[in-house]
Length: 74
Image (tube, rainbow, N blue to C red; front, side, top):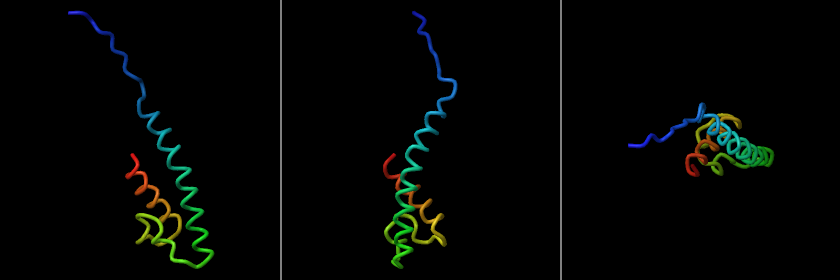
């Protein structure tokens, strides 16, 4: 039997954190702009974003929408 060297990464979650940030931040910015434009125009913007229907403010609605969107793409 031959020995196969095994070298595990020291911190595999670090790459996952970077990937999460690289997806979350642009999506949050895009959804926030959509929500802000809808708020300024006076349209019911919460129905545009997935998961934001029951949220009370813009930030909570956008955050919920981004998490819902990310669960569909990952």
